[in-house]
Image (cartoon, rainbow, N blue to C red):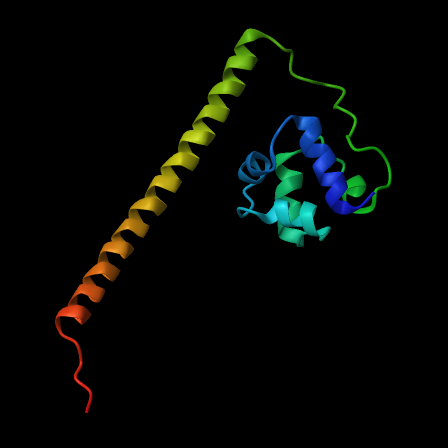
Length: 132
């Protein structure tokens, strides 16, 4: 099984689509899609980000195919109760809100750039340079 197939298997196991996996892993848009489609690998920084985000993922398995996909869960685990579920959901919601806020900031900057470019084009159309 290739690296791309292994990462896709893990994403499917988590019940995610590729883009949501990229977002949660703080990877660039399309990074994992290219890996899966073109059967390529990732740089060390991207793999480290995946390892930090998905702590149940066995990175040795991801890189080499050796061993099991998942790391055994820790012996001491937090008891599952409604409070923990709500806290986890609240944390995820905050993360998505932060991501949306960053996206909104990027959109605002891009709109400003578009307006500036429109002004430049308009000025060039009003004051065309005459050929010499």
